Length: 135
Image 1 (cartoon, one colour):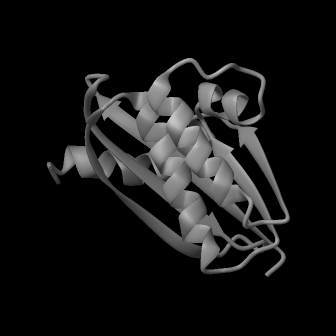
Image 2 (image 1 turned 180 degrees about the vertical axis):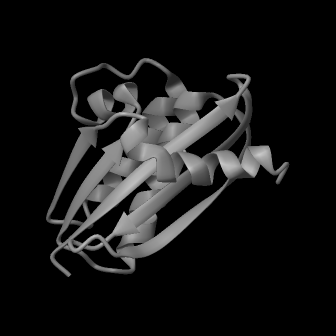
Image 3 (image 1 turned 45 degrees about the vertical axis):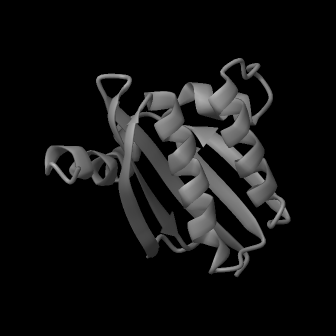
């Protein structure tokens, strides 16, 4: 497979609070290849965003694409992944290291900041774990 698009979102109610993630993977024609999410306990929104990215990238591995296009509504996540923002938080540094290593499995990746409206499906998955009391 040449390329997939992955939309990721993490949420935390309380920040820190109950947290979860969601992601969707699409082929180049817009067909959903995979969607998933889960709860991650009590943590911050930023950690939840990184977990969503990690899980989304892991989800892409089975399709063996050459390129990834990643979409997130977290400006912090996107700017940190692009090297535009310094990572100060120790947990985020660890999560950045993990996702960076995972991304080495692909020839190329690009990450884009999108609006919440453009990311509503991943948001819906992430929030479903909190709204439906799946804790």
